[in-house]
Length: 143
Image 1 (cartoon, rainbow, N blue to C red):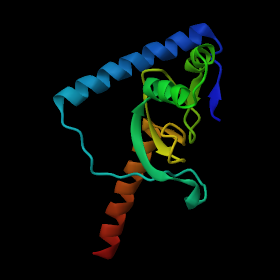
Image 2 (image 1 turned 90 degrees about the vertical axis):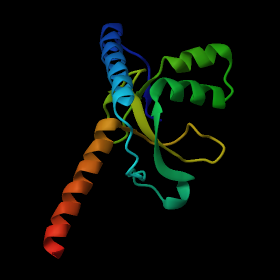
Image 3 (image 1 turned 60 degrees about the vertical axis):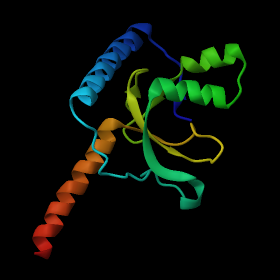
Image 4 (image 1 turned 90 degrees about the horizontal axis):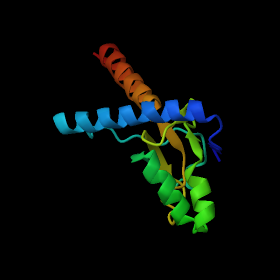
C-alpha cells in the first residue's frame, strides 16, 4: 500500500495549506470554464489486465477517497480515525498528496470502489501532453 503516517506536523500543515489553495483554484476554474472530457485514460501502472476491474482512471478528491476507503473496509471508529490521518502518494512520481488535492484512480476489485492505483494530476497531465505531441508528430510523418 502507498500509505504512510503523517510524520512531521510542520511539513504536513504546509502541504495541507498548498492542497487547500489548489482545491480553491480548481473550484474557481470549474466555475469559470466547462470541464473537458476528451480523454479516457487507462491505468498505466504495469499489472496483468485481468487484475483490473475497471482500468479507466477516475478523478476523485483525496479526502473522499480516504473516507470511502476507511468506510468500505468496516473499521472501528478508532481505526477509521487513524486511517484518516494517513498520507497518500502518487504511484508514478511518489509525490505526497494533501487532503484537498485530487488524484486519478483506477478500480482493482468490483466490490471495492476505493482500492486501486493512485496517480497525481501532474502525471496524468504529462501523459496527455505526451499523447498530443506524439499525435502531432505522427500526423506530420503520415502526411
